[in-house]
Image (tube, helix red, strand yellow):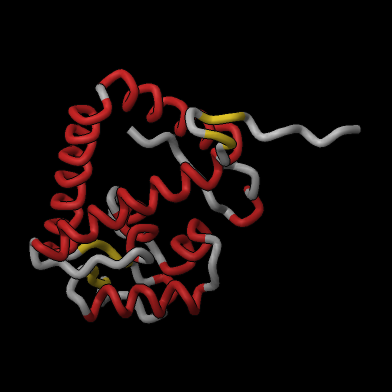
Length: 163
């Protein structure tokens, strides 16, 4: 059986996976630059945790399962976020694994700034590339998430359509 040939893009062979990855990184880097300019210290690794805390506090165990990493790695990430003032832990429970962790007031401000910058970047891309192209790209990438995003349910990792 012959190997399939890469689909030629507008300027030669295109690697859709690489293009999506690089585009995502470029947009993520731009958001990070804007947040830094606003005085926030949001790191790439933080971006996985924040959406999981948007609906309220969660335990280290639940976060580790959703992130697909160990509880130890999750605790370390949360300690770093706490030291930077973005999350806080409920002081009540005795066992740290069952102690809920949620966004602090500063964490919510950072999350709101992140959302605002994402919306602004979307508008800038629509102005530059055309709203129809941006909408089609958004729909296509959400389709990719639906097709490939739930391939590891045993790790508890869930990808949801991004609005």
